[in-house]
Length: 481
Ligand SMILES: Cc1cc2nc3c(=O)[nH]c(=O)nc-3n(C[C@H](O)[C@H](O)[C@H](O)COP(=O)(O)OP(=O)(O)OC[C@H]3O[C@@H](n4cnc5c(N)ncnc54)[C@H](O)[C@@H]3O)c2cc1C
Image (cartoon, rainbow, N blue to C red; front, side, top):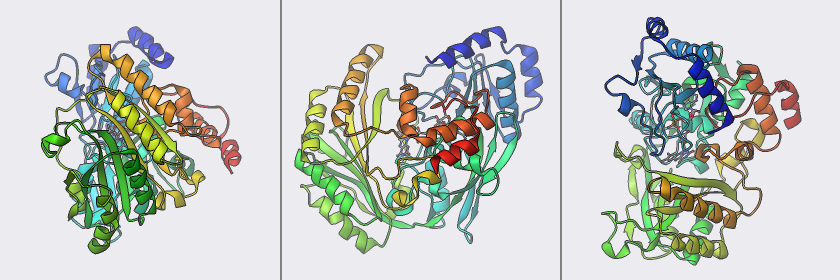
């Protein structure tokens, strides 16, 4: 637990949420209040990842920005830790709190689609899958990540690296404006003209600056894609060749290669279970015939074990998910320059040396549209990094955690090719040094300056935290130029 979390717990012991406080608060809000004694509390306090068994004093399922403002004010005035939750997929467990307040946006799902203008205003309680299905009905899309149940709130604030990253860039590259409630409870509209500093910061800077209630997204024409899962045997040569093909592929093709030991999944033949595989997710966002041609080299790398790549409506890339799936996992995110045969060999060795029920090296070739946006244009500073790598292992109970963490740490160190860098969306609770790796150089100073302006007392601290700096934002902005 960080010092800030301990400070907040001490404060919460001084000012509990007594009945009078709750009564006064509930008279001001439209949303649902859930307390420990209420039915549904256990379900409401559950987040995606297992291992975060926290007991908030109050969960508020907010109904509108006014509710958001009241929750922020309550938490700030009572000195309570405030957890912000959209889709609940925080890797670090930041969307729940022990003894504090959870501001849960999951009931705010309003969506306004402007098919003519190719934009959409979307409330942040929507998941990536829900948004994609709704705009997909019009043959339109905004790119998010690889998982439909992730909230658009969190994935967008971190940057958003997904199936359209090479074709259309990061999710934040399609954010035209946002509405955000800041630490003083005020609702602001931010865009290139209005509060441009804040607009810059919320495109990559995470949940540090306020509660985003809705985003205005650009929509692209993406109807039928060629995409889905391709499973091939993994060897050092195949891993290196896969990456080389992904780098050489047209920008319409984005790939995610999960190198792993095949789990006993029903769509894999029994003889493949326990074998080293690449479970790849491919999306070609373009003409179908060209897509088939772009995917052919991947099919030719080795005899496919399973090939589910086909023309499909883009929203089908997010299949239905199990609601009660709560894995416990440790991971490490980084950027690397190359994955050649030697790196492939190291990946194979590490995966075979572990007996975790699930262990994976996830390789994402970047570039394309994402890399053409200047690094200083948004708070996502790793634009020129060619490959993102995430290594992860599942653990079974607290007693299993230390050795899985040790494996992840060793594996990540072995893969290190330079200053690692980090994608904030995949950071666990890894300390300020790692948060700084997400925001290298002057990006950090500029973010800290903006934080100082909009959240000087660090109300929004339960996140990959950027402490407020007294330095003015204009000084920091000039440092970045
Ligand atoms: C299975 C899985 C797959 C993933 N795949 C990808 C991927 O392909 N690409 C990718 O880029 N990322 C991916 N991620 C990372 C994901 O984008 C982040 O974990 C993200 O923060 C989750 O968003 P959420 O709204 O679901 O999470 P939450 O837990 O609800 O929120 C996470 C944090 O974001 C902040 N936050 C969320 N909503 C708001 C808001 N409306 N206003 C202010 N702050 C807010 C808060 O600080 C909160 O603690 C994945 C994560 C998981 C668990």
